[in-house]
Length: 319
Image 1 (spheres, rainbow, N blue to C red):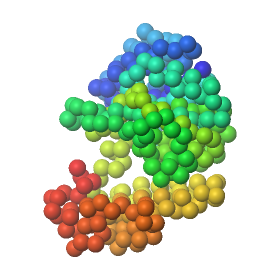
Image 2 (cartoon, one colour):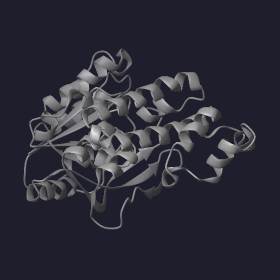
Image 3 (cartoon, rainbow, N blue to C red):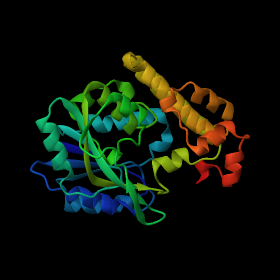
């Protein structure tokens, strides 16, 4: 009924909690978990093998001999798409190896909803944040106070963290007919979030059923965004701009929304990285409601160049 895709790399300190969340699911239907280990150099593969031996009907490991993340975008995209193509379930759920599912009825609740509502292609739910550095829970996503239908515009403007990755449960039949470009972007979850909002109804379930771990050294976000060098980050920014161009080409009726999102993203990151002229241009192009009017942003945009960052001591990206 459900295929869960779990990507992991050097998660020896977290993977047991992740796998426990899978095998602890209480469902009236069978499900499988494809655990893809990207050539971890720590004990992660051994831990996965132990769980696979004890839960062979659930845990289906895939071990890479060579790290695929480091081989470039084309290889990563082919692998990501291949995992979906290999899914056997009617539904596909996601959870990375450093996160975990905290509710034993998570899958049951989501599948029950999608089975009862065939016009919905995806549902997602609230998730708690756990700060690995502080060793403490620090709140939750808490997008809406009650169960809510979510519009395509909200899913586009909300960025990749709008839907916690480990909360996504998607109808596989729609994955099968998705344009290839959905799986060929520099990031995996955000394009799926947008795609399902564009082709089907999406439901938010106002209950926290999983935990999203932040500030882990092996996370994709840490490896991709935590650099103080704008030159290095610009390649990521260029890929994000390409993402919006690709989606605009496939779904031109949402061109204005993609343009707004592109400029909002440019304004934010160019301001953080000290590219103030470019940031101001993008910020001014936005409708008033879309502009970040926080004190920190306004100081970066309109104060003496770099004053806010000098006051802070370090740019926010280094935190």
